[in-house]
Amino acid sequence: MKSIVAKALFNSHSYAEYRKLVTDLLSEEKSTGNEQSESLTNYSKLNEARMNRLDKTIKISEETISKLQKLDHQYIWLVISEGWCGDAAQILPIINKMALASDKKIDLRIVLRDENDDLMQQYLTNGGKAIPKLIVICKEAGIVRADWGPRPKGAIDLIANYKKEFGVIDDKIKTDLQLWYLGDKGIAVQDELMQIMENIKYNRL
Image (cartoon, rainbow, N blue to C red; front, side, top):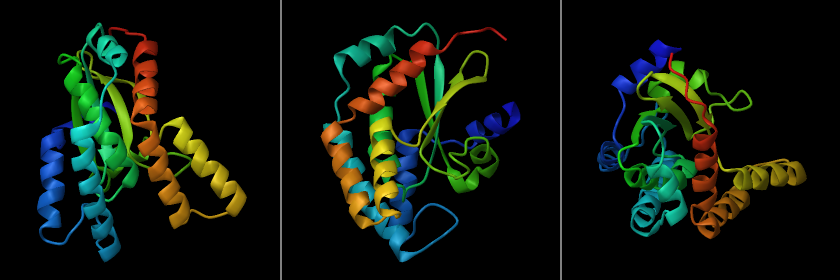
């Protein structure tokens, strides 16, 4: 497992590099990932606009900033993502702002799911390759301490309840999900990630 994480980190991108990669591919009418289609490219275009907006508007709470800066150790947040993923587009700008606010306690790195299948296989959700997936790594020890994703609990419940009632994931629930993120303003992601960070028991190995 340690070698899989190390390999992924070696091939990882900063947030700025990830954004540029997606933008450059879109200039060629392409998306990230092994599969290429018009719909995936269109999703990527929509997500880029969404991330551009969130990069400007998302706010990290003072409480979260204080907790981030009081972390006792340094961590790497390794996120598995793809440019076409709607949840990633909503969540990555929040994670990036949290890392920037952490006073260098958190180093954010991003890898593409389809280029890192060995890693993705270690973090399946109900047997599926759901993303984004955030992996918390102790920087000093190089050991995975926790993981999170692909959505905050409120969004998970929204999807689960809709699927239970209607049996499908269709355009309506996708729209409802985006509206949920808009209303939440990044608070759930901040709260859940800080809960994880506060629960990590540091252990020198």
